[in-house]
Image 1 (tube, rainbow, N blue to C red):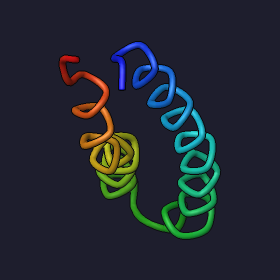
Image 2 (cartoon, rainbow, N blue to C red):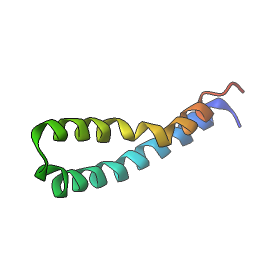
Image 3 (cartoon, rainbow, N blue to C red):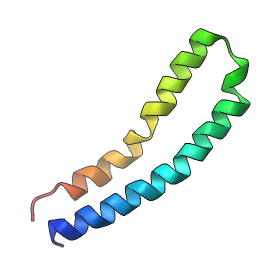
Length: 67
């Protein structure tokens, strides 16, 4: 598969994933994290902010493969 097509497919997949992940993370933050102390909130928000990249790492590696 040409790299250009992989980039298109990967970009669409990333956008779909982030559009699904963001509301889930916000719902979790609103329901559970808001009740914790401020220091723990900062750590948990940081984790939620970075956690989306780990499931997407294989996809990004696939997108960047040479032809």
